Structure formats: structure tokens, C-alpha cells
Length: 118
Image (cartoon, rainbow, N blue to C red; front, side):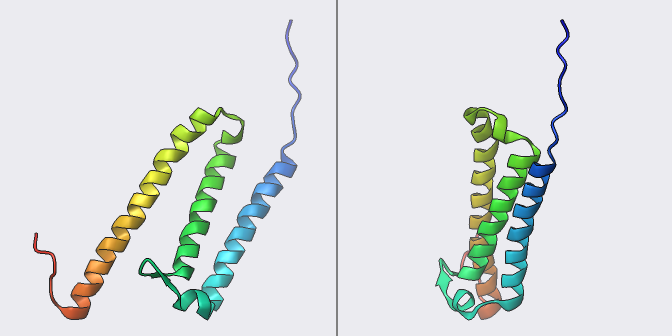
């Protein structure tokens, strides 16, 4: 016996994904344009809170894009974590390397002196 598969309309889901990603992008653009002083002047781990907020929102958008467009919401938890965990680790590693090396390059330009001699 052949089973007939009904076509399920994903219009509502598509608009929901579009809405969530649009809202997050609008928040990023608004904060990028206005740059509130409290977020721009407050430092956390040698970087202002506004930049940390941008990093967090960007990671959220990347995770949600993977979640929605790779259809991970219907998969088993182990498969989801096998895809997402390496990405999270690599993003954290990239942020760490960028902060350490960026701070070093800034110090070299600022003082014209090399602190680390390899």
C-alpha cells in the first residue's frame, strides 16, 4: 500500500524565522547606530559591553539559522550537540584569540615596543 503524504505548509514557520532574525538584526543595527554610553563606556574583560552584546546576538543568530535551516529542531539531542558543540567551542576559541592578539597588536602600536619575544 502506498501512503499518501500531505504537503504541509510552512508559511507560518518561515514568517516566524524571518521575524525572529529581523528583530535581532534590528536590535543590532539600532545599538550600532545609537551606541548607548552606558554600554559603550563600561568594560568587561577589556572590551566594552556593546561589543559583547554584538558577539552574543551574532552567536544567537548563527545558532538559530543552523537550528531553523538545517532542520535540527526535529533531530535527536545527541545529533544536535554533535553539530552545535564544536561550533560553540570554535567561536569561543576565535573570540579568545582575537582578544589576546588584538590587545597585543594594540599595545605594540601604542607603545612601539614588543612585549612577547618569540
